[in-house]
Image (cartoon, rainbow, N blue to C red; front, side, top):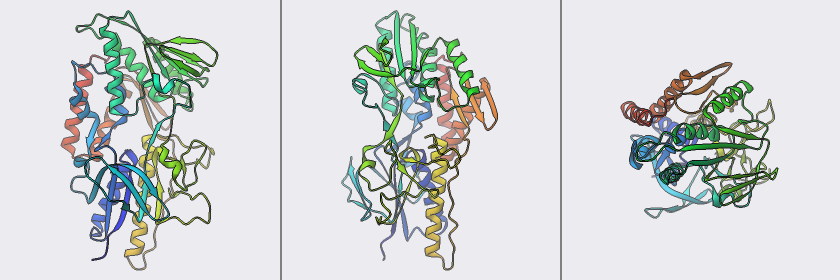
Length: 432
């Protein structure tokens, strides 16, 4: 029997998981599972629903323990890919040979031989970018993973338990993650009344641009600025963090800010593995991709093995209208995954079915809808020209989250997780 052609997807985030599931379903429907295999590789055996990390970071231990929080924001791969022809490998990718078509993995549980690919989807995500700011990495918390969220929560609770009159929290970066976290911490911190005397918080966002949420519509920015002011969150714009010392942040203007907790949400960059690949990259190290989501070789005469696609935070796609890179949001990664998956299937169909002409699709960026929650049951939601805020925005946020869960899990399982999460966050007494 001939060796199966291998479609390897590296990374099980929003884009990678979507691509693997779509390809596997189509392979199954085309009755080609005996000729093609889909392999999904990720260092975690679960997917993290990152839009709820800020809530995990601000949930009291009395409300939910480690396992309860993990259950509502991480979803086991075994459940997500159940009944699909996908082989999942829980492993760290250590190297990729794009010339010979090999992926080298370091397994956590069992030993895996190197993976051979005929089609490769790079969905490697990103890592926190500290911009070489002295002392920043050593003295700050990030918010990229489930564990990061719990570290922030535990540090806040520890300080509150010490009975500090004022807990000073500085958040470096005024993008959506920083804004969401600032609003939620401010709502939560002074409501820790069980076994801990009421405390006073001082939450400050530091943003280098002239406004928070740079790149967002001014109408959205104005609404959120007013919300943050009403909550008591301080905002410092037009000044960047230049140096970090334990308990002290020195800004470019030489102004000093003391802190008890420093959280860095100021940017991301490509994972180091990307720099080792013979692919064209932009100044921040992300892989440049063409309209079909195919990766571009470093030089035109370089012959790469098989078909190689890139999606999500690992890649840079330039909007042909604005000439600027599109933002790294979940909706963009999912849309890119749809395009990459379709084009891989079209290539396969052209090989397997006589006289079939592949209908290759190009990715077209759009004004993606988005929702930014800012403390309690309040959020801003933008859908095209329509902007809604307040309780309605918060309700829409919940429905969007439910819709995603239903897209990756059996309906009743998705409903159970969603309702449990809703109960925990309501019970956490942060709905003002």
